[in-house]
Length: 485
Ligand SMILES: *Cc1c(COP(=O)(O)O)cnc(C)c1O
Image (cartoon, rainbow, N blue to C red; front, side):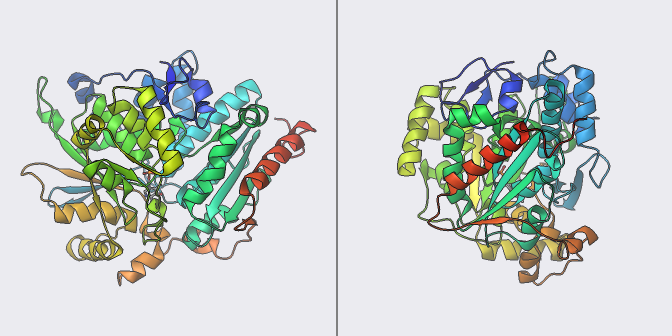
């Protein structure tokens, strides 16, 4: 299993190099050069597996044994998935009428990112320990990635994590999950701008190959392939639990619809990969008023709006769904030249129209929809009324689809629940509903915080670069922060 860039400039990389990267050196994103096919028999034999067991199976397909012996892989991944508040790390809630909600938010920061982030961080730690290497993780966040990255690597020896969040555009729980981490290896910046504004200097820093090499700079955003890889398990688990394939025989497999609240499109990219591996999924990407993915699927209009709209579902307030590049690459027949042309044009002009063939391929694999704040509130209310089930506003974006698009008779539908409503009290209150906040969320209010501001007009890239250089020079001067094991 080898990896290449979606822009055609890099081939033949091994898993380890890809794990320790962000964007590929040509500005593209890493993808496996080939995708394995899952046969109906394999899928049927996986039906009894738990979610953590499925993560093992999926990772084993893409991480060659020469890099991580199977026994080690099992230990690393089961360690990563052991700190969740429900057995098996995830829950499937049946809400009636063919609708199930796959709860992926039972980790420490109450959002689905904890699952893939913990696995990625543990794999990182595995290589760092084995090779006595160091790394500097640089993460931009629309709200949930930052907290999840910090919680999975704080206190890890040999790693610094630099996180930039959009000040005033995330909930107080999201903010405090980042700013209350006082460990020396955690560096939090609050930027006066949107998460897309933050993405610009970050991309520049990742494009600087000297900086990347000299300071072990890497990403834990879903730019990082390993995050997407672990997320393949979400879709497989949903399919094996809900499609009813255990009642079928031979080559015919039933279809399952999976509806995904979509922001940076890492999760939906994972869904597309699973579909191309032979699993008959009908994928629906749901967005809020930031609707670029919806317009792209609808009519090939991959263009940013003039600004990011702030909505009740802030973790998907994103105009640059960067993982769509992976989807475009897969659906263009892995045409690196085409993708390079398209994405460079998009980065320059912020708007492109997909070529006809690519748009046709995209709309045959994905459908999409866009939901207003009003729609989010109505969906949260209706779901509470009909099923006594409290949705987070992002999950509501997915469940809106269920209430507005009838399901073919006899089929099931799975909405991915990306966060706990406890993280989004403001939206819950707007819907006239109430929630008892878990103790660990209440405790955040009283904890000490530490972060630095990045103001408008300042050179954010320079501030971040200085920090990256200084943490790694401190490390080189004699491991001030880290005592040897
Ligand atoms: C990150 C996030 C999303 C979007 O996931 P992508 O993989 O970036 O599309 C959706 N909901 C919540 C709560 C999130 O934190």
